[in-house]
Image (cartoon, rainbow, N blue to C red; front, side, top):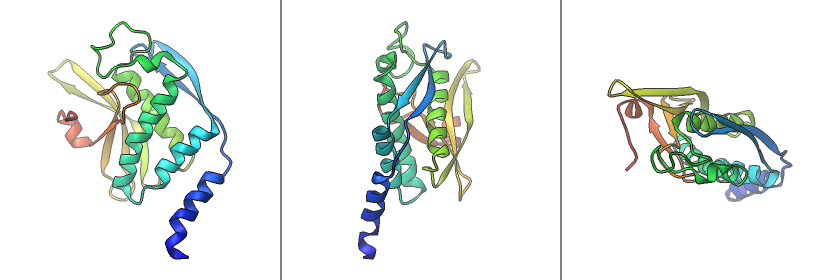
Length: 181
């Protein structure tokens, strides 16, 4: 029976009734446009199952990266954010584009939704953080802390096109200019 516990847990999680969730999403650089998006019970269950399979904090960070990409995909089905490209240059002027202010705010909103539902077991959500490079360039990202170790991380979805998993960096590496490979 003990060997079947993870399977039974997942089956139980998938059968629980979930509510539709509605949250504000912003885009068009510096949150010039704001729309409410809705995630139905099936979408929320998919998100919950991705997180439920995390056995430890490291696995949960990997799941968080994938979940942020999935939320972006769902959001892009309801808003013009489907057109968002990684960075700020590939989609400049396009309806639905997002800069790091939009990305960090939306990612924080997604993470806060997870936290409110009790689906983050190993992390807490903090306010977004920023780094300054070359005295003028600011870059923002969502911010989490591992509960047991108090290690801080950023969850950064700005680097990639809409729907791609976010990157998760230790805060100190990100502050020192970490960039995905």
